[in-house]
Amino acid sequence: MIFCNTFSIGAFGPLLPEIARAQRLPDWQLGVLAGAFGFARTLLDIPAGRLAGRRLGATLVAAPLFLLVGVLLLGSAGPIEVLVLGRFLIGVGHALGMVGGLTALLERGEGAAFRLNTFEFSAMLGILGGVIAAGSLPASWSWNRSFLVACSPQLVVVALLPAFWRQFSGGRQGEPRPQTEPSLPEAPLKWQPIVTGMFVVGAVIAFAWSSVSQFLIPLRGAREFGLDRAGNSRMLALPQVVDLIALLPVGYTADRLGRRMLLGWVCLALGIGTVFVGLGPFPLFVLGAGLFGLGLAGWMLPIGVIREHTRVSALGWRTGLYRVGVDAGIFLGPLVSGFLGEVGARYFVALIGGLTLAAGARLLWPRPL
Image 1: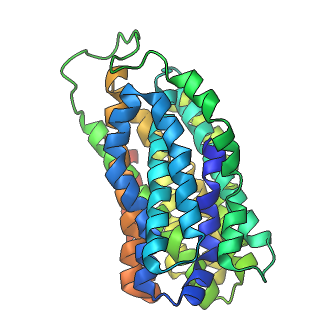
Image 2 (image 1 turned 60 degrees about the vertical axis):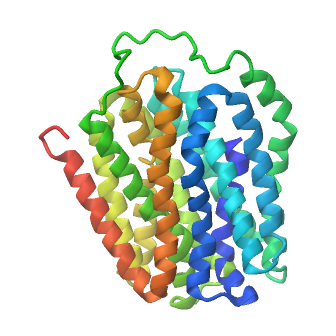
């Protein structure tokens, strides 16, 4: 599911400069369009978490349907209001699919980091597929035709909806599944400092991802370095490829050596890469994209730490709440960048990189968080 659904995320970035030209959109409207995705996810994460905790089957079935309608609206190449609505509905679909998928995986308990990174691996593979599809289609095609074709794998998920319903709809009428959790208290559910810290780290990583991949790389690549659609696709594919290579080893290692230390190192890589993408000349721009991808391999580690301090009955709620902070970063990153303009966004992205570096250093500090 997550592999097919994320093609729409990957296909959007390479086409952003063409959307700006064809629709005659200024940077601030581009920021609104890009940010509508994260805005929808921010609004829907907590309701999606509550729904997933009670009716997981309905959550997973609704996700691809919202996504399909959003893709069709965005692909209509209509006025800005229609484009923003389409992008918003894509965000709704991803909120339901992400929170529902994470809830289903986290309920399993042991080996969560590897399972979560496998989920993220599938998502990044789908994003890479969308990037490659958008970049490899004929340049003579309009942006919306290319977008619709690149998103076509979503139809596979629509065909699988009956299987999702059969697998996940039974026995979830508001009661948690019986689980044995000897290490977690039944009540009250306490907020440890490490959980708060993971919420902050997740939001900072999301800020970096959305600002860089959904705004700065395609626009800076096209305007400053003269990259065409194929060139921008290669630039956006680079962090995805590095991420894919690192994801499963990072998840495997985190389950054995500890998530916090590994998360600190990947935050350092992400911060350095973000600064290079924002301020570096072309060689550092490329290197920064690679380091950025290495940092993204730790994207799922914060939610794995949260899982260690959360009982099963509260997983849907706390996962949704965590995704609010993450998706607020996904929303605000391109929105703020759009209002700052491409030049101002470079310094904004460098500032986010500095915050990510600070988060990494804090995680590696010897004192408890």
